[in-house]
Image (cartoon, rainbow, N blue to C red; front, side, top):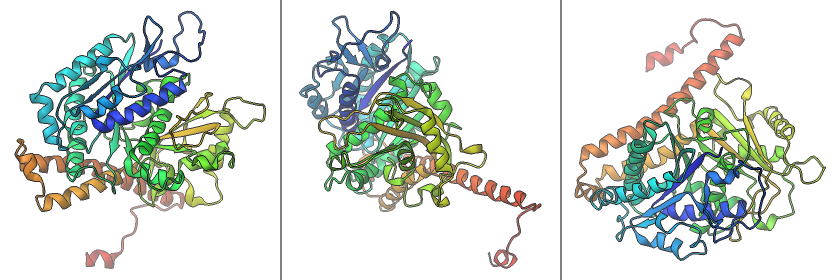
Length: 489
């Protein structure tokens, strides 16, 4: 039986990215702009189509997204109402207020509470849940740096958890649109980001970290777009969301439920911030000029330029705790259009483990033996939308991994927060809405705890590796210390 997932899109970024995501989902599942199937498929009696985990079929044969879009500012939702997909969404699933949040976390939170917008949002979510037979959880799309995505998002996550997840053990996955290092929408983005991250630490089961800065870099360096627009960035994020949800929308044994994703990706609850990598990523000008073999794609997945996380120049010096690779499309078997074969993927992984240059080997935590990957295969080729900057290829792969490299994202906004807070810049906007200096300090401490958690894990890995090397050399006892250096310290 299909297990349903409901997508909740919050704020301008969540709604705009959500629009591109649903446009891509429709293209992948052969659903037209009006919700009717473009290609009829006959399934055995009692068997549901896999994509019905994200769509439901009405009595008239129309497929409707299991989604709710909400923003305080009506402009983003109105764009959806007037778009080419205006007949796809249920009218009651498009919800907005009449005034924006001013771009601040505290104002978005206060408006959501005082104007009863969160209860209104929850009413629409309950209507969507009532249409499910085997409901398994939520995908919440929001920007940590936005006023609505941040302020309303924290309260919405708390309400969703209390209403649906405490007793029934349903899952809440965040799709976090992380602020760019170069292009900010508001000056107070670091404040919003720290408050959002700190106050939602225990409200979601997993948070996909989709970094806007990495999307900018991917557009510039991989797809050769000199001046990327938000449409280009949203197309990149939509492709990543599509690739990371393949196992929920197609028949594949790996990560076929939200529970299995949590089991395979999250070793401990505090490490719930996975990062996603996508390959191949090329411009349309390169169409037909390259042959992307499974090995080339697998190798690219571990390159920082293909990562939706600006992890810095030393990405592979971090440690992986989990890695799930999902391939889609046709294989290299030479027998026509057949799906990627498992033997091709495992051969690519074997070659990746034994390359000519040892510096490019992805390093796992030392207690994870044999460099184990989880592998899933979907036979359906990748799809692009008409306005997408992606080149169309026969095969594609996504890497969903848990790595200590994600701490670089948190460090980036943490430093920006400190620079503003040191001069108390713009703090008065939050104080006027009811926040106190203690709220700032408490949020900063909790945000620092996230960074510290990953730093400690990286140090544990290095200490364990050193001990294993000593044991391999037959050395016993504690490692030697530099007496002179110790005396100087």
